Image (cartoon, rainbow, N blue to C red; front, top):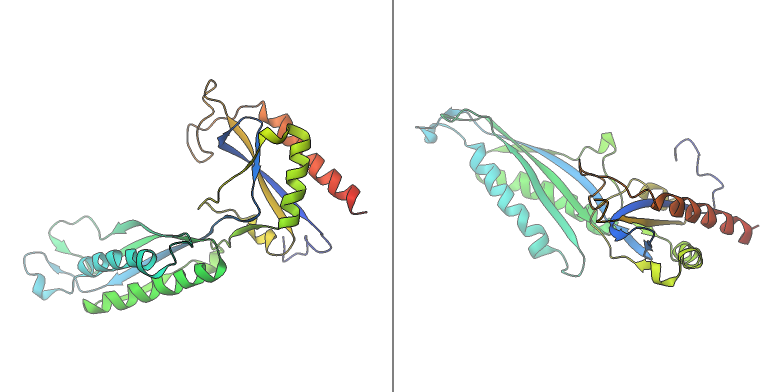
Length: 250
């Protein structure tokens, strides 16, 4: 959409998302970084297949990959500023299912998150370096794919302070000060972030949490359901935010 010019001559952009963490009808947001940048990686570690009873005749990619996984944990714990939240998580590890053979390859993968582009791309650089160099110690080779061609790298979602303040004022007028919340940053990611890099933006939440109805699950859960009482509030907030912005910037 950005490439096709959909955001040309657009002065501001707003987005709303439901939140199971906040009571139905509350509105929440925050200025600055709200959601993390998100990327994924897949590494292929190559060695030499051999029988398990004679490991000396193989080049063991399981051992090399295991060492790489352990070393990856040091990137955040020992290289990142403790006040700059970052995540590196290995979520898959596959060397096949033959219990009597050391495989020729192991594939591992995972995700990484950060709240600034500088930290995000430093994580990307270090993940590749750690995997490639650590596996060399065990005589293996490796390649790391970050799926950049598939556009699965999302930058941080950052709220413009002026746009956030506009959302806050409209929300307070609509639902009252007691029902507006300054929410904490989250390590989740959002493709709306691409828009926030181009146009002053604000992303905000409408609460849907209602324990009586069972509306307590994340939108990614198979048990997700929505308290529909939030729908008219969300629609009214989204419309009022746009209408007031247009009226104030004629």
